[in-house]
Length: 191
Image 1: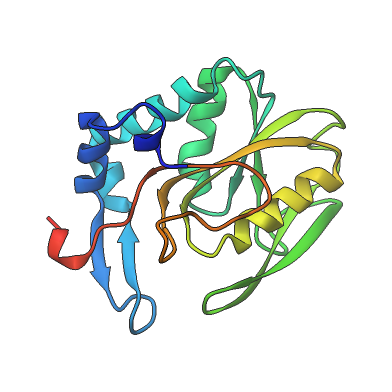
Image 2: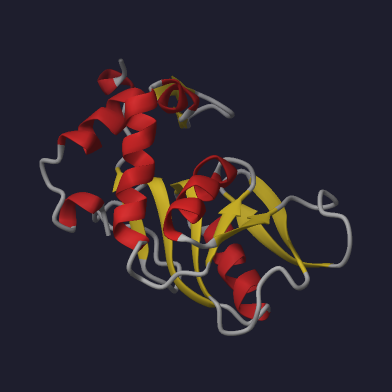
């Protein structure tokens, strides 16, 4: 669900977040409209609003794990975790974590990849959310859910700054609730 459908319709923070994200056409491949969140990070108010909106949503849900997908989930996850009193667990690309890991492969719209989780980072029964910058097909989030559930966590929800809706205006089904702050902007809406 989008934040605007969950009581935040007309919230000026959502518009400010959307406007702070630069649109880069045909990157990384022809035909994609890349949503560049680096410009969001440069706008301290919009960046803080992004974190605050997620904190407001999760602060009373008894979340003990905020898992962030490499790499952009790392930009939002630690601040959310600190604010709600949870630990941050990085879900990394292959061969980036020392020690014993479990892995999950997944398909992307333009290739395939893998996420890894440290064995022991998550305990059975812990309540988790997964954070990333953007969801399109849902492949990365599905892999994150599988990893956390294999470790025994209860994945409560996945959260993204940007959710790419399908032709019917719905977010990709990932098997868990999905919360996105905004929809992607097109090039004509770029700042």
